[in-house]
Length: 337
Ligand code: NAP
Ligand code: GDD
Picture 1 (tube, protein in one colour):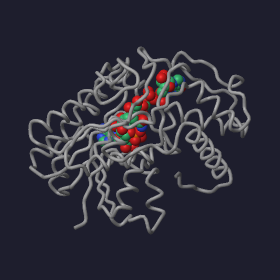
Picture 2 (cartoon, rainbow, N blue to C red; picture 1 turned 90 degrees about the vertical axis):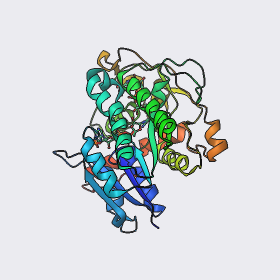
Picture 3 (cartoon, helix red, strand yellow; picture 1 turned 60 degrees about the vertical axis):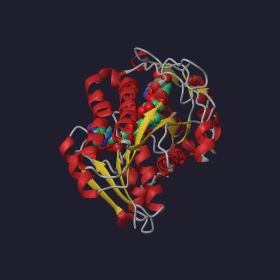
Picture 4 (tube, protein in one colour; picture 1 turned 180 degrees about the horizontal axis):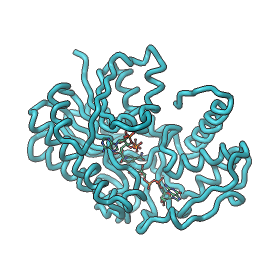
């Protein structure tokens, strides 16, 4: 029987890679999308432009994590074998401006989905997109599944709630529910308002003479950056285990924004110090200074480990943005890999 998956956040970076991954495995994939005044399905273009992608097994449904009745209706109608909750107000800086909205979607949205599963009584497996932001002011280095949380933003607090409510439904109702505690993961499909993509896009624009300055905030923060395409496999692997558990997914390396700038600008022979200006507006009221994960458990139990590391990741993102700009200037539309 064809297995069915429901993905919230299907139009996002991870949602698009996970959809490709599951279609390639033969799944019937259902995705929740928000109605927007402009198209928000651009990241799914690779699927719709490839007749062999399994696009006939992909169905999109309008809905929102704020709308419990839609979630229950979809759960009952689709009866998915696996549910991946990737939807969130996912921007940390924005969560300081919109804490209540962030809580509603990123925290309460997870309960709405879990309740939809419980109320409809379907037998499904549940993945919650938990985050290294929960470690915040990290209590130990590196961070593991046992490291205590100390979130530093409304987003981080909301993700801590979603983490625990997932654990609670596992313990209370025997739901096969897992938290993937994913450290930062990037790709050519990363939103342009996150620091890595903001930098790689700027490199392409500066090289082409379309931009001279790049305004950034704190350059000292360190992150454990991996490649999103590889991280979605870990999500799937978690739901294939007999026993539901929580896993850290990370590369085990940490690098500062400065190092990212060195590598990205250096890749095309530019000196970032001539272009970057510090803009206080990009600072956060409270910062997460250092994240680095220990994914030993995922390696041992899931057989998962990262292949693409920092330098390769930065270069592939810069190269993609160079190509994207070239195609755009030459009037070609291009599907971002
Ligand atoms: P992303 O690119 O920002 O995608 C977020 C997705 O959530 C989009 O599809 C967005 O839809 C959807 N969404 C937002 N608000 C919604 C709402 N009210 N109802 C329904 N859908 C809504 O995020 P990502 O990088 O793919 O990350 C996926 C998940 O993993 C998120 O939960 C994120 O917090 C978490 N996470 C990410 C990382 C990382 O480094 N990328 C690390 C750890 C955890 P639109 O396209 O309509 O905006
Ligand atoms: N976005 C952004 N823009 N960040 C900047 C900038 C800037 O102009 N300048 C410096 N930074 C710093 C931020 O202060 C932060 O320390 C770091 O760059 C990374 O910021 P983001 O790329 O916005 O990512 P994040 O680490 O805050 O959050 C991402 O990773 C989390 C996992 O740890 C998001 O994807 C979250 O959804 C995810 O949970």
